[in-house]
Image (cartoon, rainbow, N blue to C red; front, top):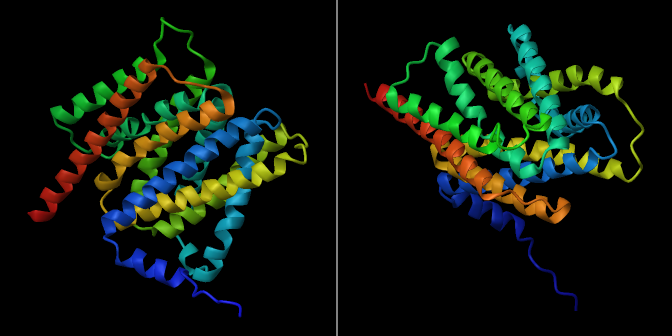
Length: 307
């Protein structure tokens, strides 16, 4: 007689919900780092045959397709907003940052790109002081200074040639930091679901023009990887968002450093790229500085809530 086994999925779901929120957040953050690193490697791989601007557009389109069932199941009422203009500004900035990042990724080793991308929280902290009027004390200012020093350690201007790809990645981190300021403003009145939905819509819209400008017919076998980039990128974003919902950011942010580990391993396997020790040192300094700033902000919020 044929033996039928009970479906283990409900049991796994029960175990998942029974796990502490911190554990769920950490696991989701680890999943996000794997998927982000895989997407970056695929972008670099596909960029040999497809222009980065076209890859960015297709990543957004396939991302919208993946996100569409969630939109339909939740209804469209959450899309009502009085801040379409600010959503559009965020979309323009995001599109520029993504196009620059993908272009830099096509030119620069994956691990180096990942290390430089850790500078985005430093730019965000600096811009929060300028545009949001946030006040930092000496320790957070020192963290920002040390973080940018770590970026210089990675770039080593004057010691090694300063390649265009690295410059584009740092510039994309700066623009991404501006979008984080816009998100902070939007979050005062908009739901995270609406912010994510409008991001996908406007990213697809604003990346279309640059894609058409450089459009080529991808080789048939590349379509599998282009679809994978969109699907993997969307899963990574959703895993990251849910990780931050499960628990405090300071509990999961240390695991974001795993992106450099995965990027190094995948870069070695696919492209034979191996980052040197100085890149690791610089990345550690940048990441530690960004984490310290996030931790200090968390402490300030706790003190404010206790008053």
